[in-house]
Length: 309
Image (cartoon, rainbow, N blue to C red; front, side, top):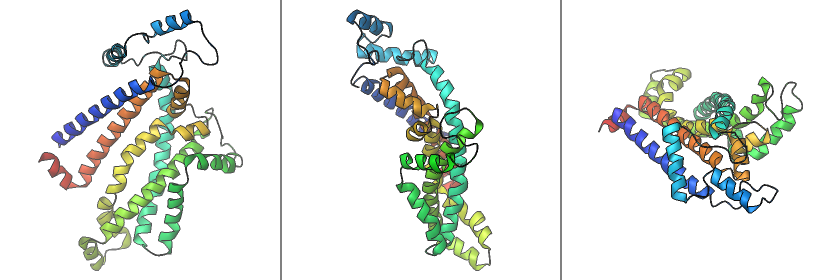
């Protein structure tokens, strides 16, 4: 168990390092300049700005200084567009917003997707299965940039208290969380159905049914533990993506989370902010997958024996 945890952690750290390295060099290939904007600056002003932020140094020197700032000081550097503002400050302000949207969205996804998938598996190839899986398939096929405006138009303009844009009252979390939650609920429902259908066909389930085990006990006691393994595997990266923020959803609802900052940083060519957000996103993905691996080991004892082998 400990060996498995350490191996996964080492792999995760390597992934974050490679991801951040690729991002560092790719963002510098973006066309344009973060200091230009809509105006043209004199060459001596551009030279001073590049010197101030260390952009006049060779790429490998900038790369070493960047990692030095992260490892020794936990500093991602200053924003190149927002004068006097550190990237760490922007992330610390945006992360709680994305965390709130992500947690509420994941609760919606789990509470809707898992029961729907279990019921669809129990009534396989019958009308409840089709009734539940049709919206799930629609949720997978319809992109977020279509769902978000529809929810804003249908719910935001007709339900009192809901906000279509902004982040100025507690109910502002409802529409973006609902959009993200229902999209992920569709995936969870499909994965849960597939896993449960496979488990319900196993011999031990048929034996329990032959002994007179009721539907509820059969599903929740005998089949659910193994049937949820595919859905649990999906929850790790999905939860990290929800916390980090959906670029499209946060932009549609003008939520000041990490997704909106990422879009603005890419448009403004804010190198340090892009690198900081990618580092945060990669770290969350690694942490979420590590937690999922531990949950899978707890649900499936065979993985525990493989990890110690």
